[in-house]
Amino acid sequence: MKKMMMTLAAVLCCAMSTMMFTSCGSDDEPVKEPAEDKTPAKVAMKFAFYQTEDMLNYCNVEITYDDGTGKKSVTLTKDNVNAQLSWEKTVASDRLPAVITFSRKVTLKQSIDELERFSFTRGYYYMYEFYNAANKDLGLGALSNNSSSQSGTGAKVAEYINQGKLDHTYTFTFNKKGEMDIDIDSK
Image (tube, rainbow, N blue to C red; front, top):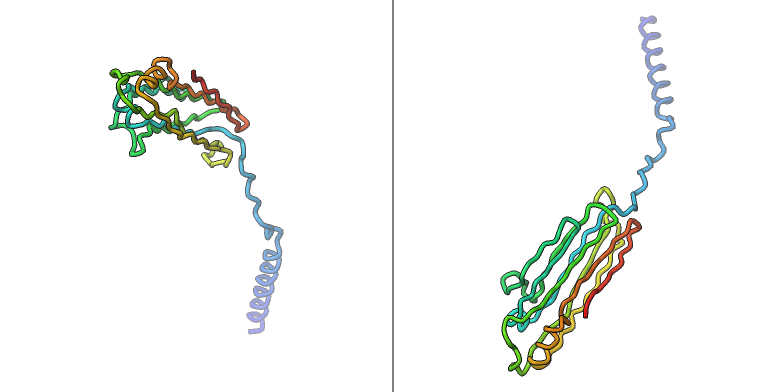
């Protein structure tokens, strides 16, 4: 019996020693998370052109955009604008630097010279955001909105349209630092 008690005491002593040494290890320090990558790698952009009811009724409004994969065009109708009569498109580029372009060309469908009032807008809206390689929003984006509308006699607005004064091209250049430059080409 004495031999059995000695064996039990030795086992308990070993178990307690093992627990003491393993519980006091140096792995109790907090695990360091890898630093978040703040390097811009991608950009997403939402752009909108505003129209008026008069523009949709009396004009052909053609939108062309290029997200770096080639030009695409759409002619606006009441069926492809939202309730606020704006056309919106979101495009993304999976690499930087990137160039994204949106253009609007307005031509008359018919004479509007006899109209006493014709409402039009040069309005647009854009917002963009940069993302890192893991698609995490970096909070470097911005937005801009210009929604002013104007009106004039049909003859005066027809002159503006024929001179291309409602035609605009917006070219956005995004660099690798998370910065954007805009070039607005209008008459």
